[in-house]
Image 1 (tube, helix red, strand yellow):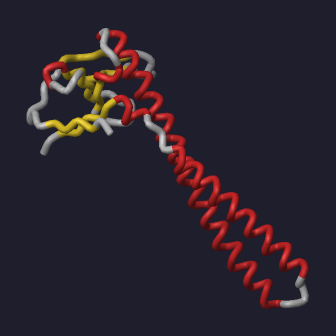
Image 2 (image 1 turned 60 degrees about the vertical axis):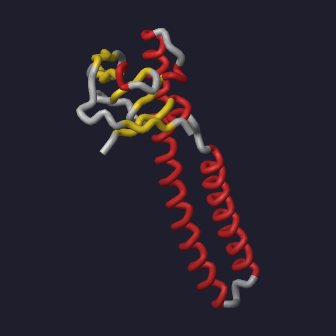
Image 3 (image 1 turned 90 degrees about the vertical axis):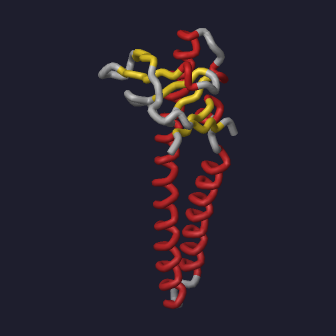
Length: 153
């Protein structure tokens, strides 16, 4: 089985519409809870609305909790993508090539990540990071199975 390499533009592209959708769901849920609370306070003599309010509030709070968890995961992924972008820009400067010619096999920065210059595996490097992730070393490397796929969008 081959290895997949992602272009710089793929690694740095952000899906902002997903974050907007998550914020919208959170806001709509909060507004629904407030609306049902106001409706309940207006009709507080009726017990059937109280049960409906509790049910809707629990469902909305569960939905809001899930969306907040997904939003935090999205922020972590964005931070990882920014770290990858910084690393690839540094490699591009060091090797005197455009970042658009760089491909990486992972969307996180870690020791052992592979970076390819161009769509040829002849210029492939393994990234070795120091302990505090402030510097790196590139070592020329070769794949055992040279079947690769390049994702460019």
